[in-house]
Image (cartoon, rainbow, N blue to C red):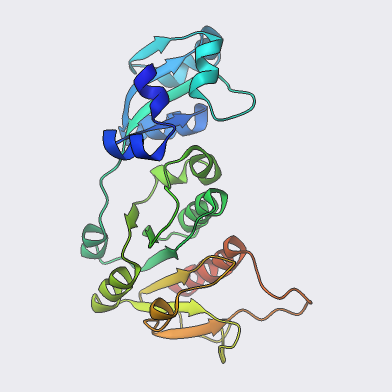
Length: 246
């Protein structure tokens, strides 16, 4: 129990190679993936969600203990200790992916989780967090992904330029959005194997990474907003690629 509570911190997740999944949706998804090593549940949670825990190693805990393991205001009393999946850029590229979402320097866990969910919905083959990005296995990111983090490979690599170079060298076209780009996303040829680059909202993509893009496109906006939230932009880009690949 004490060791599990430490997994709320990134340093302990990295050291132990484990993370916490909270709530029935995430726990069920983690169980399907075979990542769960232990489940902590209150007696009330067992009554409500016992059916989905069939065969899982369950420890019954108090409501107070459940609060200590939870990052939410109103914990449901169900938390699983999970093994971090092993995903690498090399293994992803070896599978010859058609569509990748690459987040560079994304620090907001809500946006990171939403990007994973969007990528899953649009049929992307993997999500890559490159550079100094958020830990995708923190609680807020997991919840924002709505379980999609268990549906596709999620790679973390601190060297953004090397990531993008490796993707390009594998024959994948690297696309990025830019307000000053001359190519409209609606007329761009998106039929090739594609990796989309998404940067942080505040500063955009670093210059050295943007320079590695095969092509820059813009998303036309009729209103007065200066830019789109990164998750909104990702939705449009990945949808257009998914449509071109169908």
